[in-house]
Image (cartoon, rainbow, N blue to C red; front, side):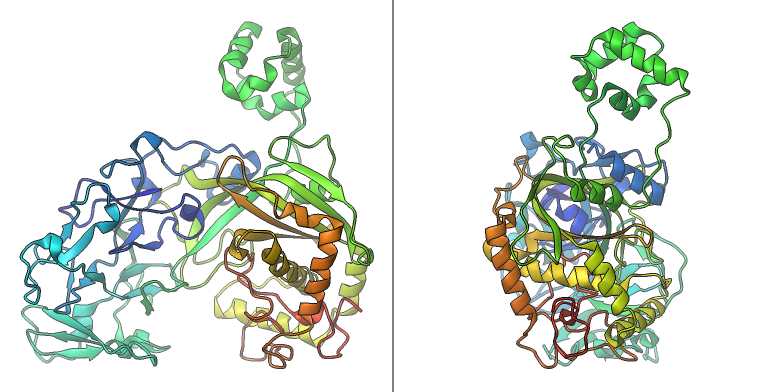
Length: 620
């Protein structure tokens, strides 16, 4: 996906291609408001207002669109792919792409250590003369005295200034206030800010000194670091660089390093494609908003023949179609279906009871025998040979990641200046394995360990976690059930990654825990690709009993030990810690951020096997 830079600094008006990212990254890791590191510069992806609506295909997924509308409003009319034009993919000056703007707005010369802003022009210049090599676009110090060459094209590229500031309250992001910070203790105002930055490369913190060559004032960035660093910084001025606007704020600022992992967290909603009923009446009900306006059979037939979304109805006689339309109209329209409170409910019902009648080109699920020896643990195993997942970006947060499936956290930042009428989305096809645990065994275990000290400690840690982030604590969260399913999922996912042929970061989990009135206990491990053909079957093949038994045996064995034991096995969050895991670490349970639903929270090996002899283990 092309990245087109434009609009800032003020002299740089014509967009030109300066880099590429994968379309899926525009939803998960490099979406609106995120800072993208390119080979020679750093940019921020601009808001949806700046995107071109041309060459953006819509993705049809009604269930997901309804969920997005529930969060953002009914003005959202479409889920759209990233803009792309194959015929212009090699044109470095194409306007088809995602708009970005340089951020941070300060850079440092690697030769003379000069630190300065990109705007106003004159001091730093953009060099972008390489035709089909947009990755070689760079900023150079035009006035550098330590570079002998006079040609900008041969000068070394400047590097982005490594410090930025953000506020926890509203997700504002801004350049570090170098000029104000250096001259905060100056007795006389400095006529000009000619700054240099010297990095001592210490492991104890940012040992970076910024000095003004005009007045001699200097200061270490270390003073702005730490818990009380906000006292050395001005108040937040409410800047959203992706929207290119300011708003009132006045909150305390926090120093951050460019490239920090907590600089941007996506808020996404995803849904699996579920086959629809093939009856004529159900198909017309699905598109009733369109058929309701048709007042003649002749016009209806022209619409069916000319519109691609109705191609499945073309083989049905016109009289039969019109009779169904009149029947629904006479009844006052189709009955209002009871909306599911969670996107996972419909998926659970279909995966738990797979049937050949509910299959199509994008969904095929076939039950397979349960591995020998695991009848008391597993209700059934389902090989999902075909699946299609659509994921939509709704908003994002900074500093603190949103909770699982929380689409409206307190610190949510909008993707657009005003009201969004569409959101970016990506569709991927692939395969998976669905494992349904025995509900009677899970319910019996959760009732037995409800007041276990390890689970109570996690419950209290969750209270502290919510309080520290000013989030609402939901007392009904099923800690025991979720820890059991999540730990089981991670143990199996780590084993599957060793044999399926896909990287561990490409395997994703999807947990089904249900609700207090309709409990569920299922895990879907899947992998998907944006290619139209999806994946190659390496994961779904491991769902057969002869392979799955070996994987489960090894997963249970690995759960009983960790290279960090006994520290890992005995770990329980205690006051004032708000860590949301117990016996879990990178050596035994943690997975990549793209794989885990909850950022490696709610994990405890002791919930699966007996580690400390305290009676928590689910397996004997």
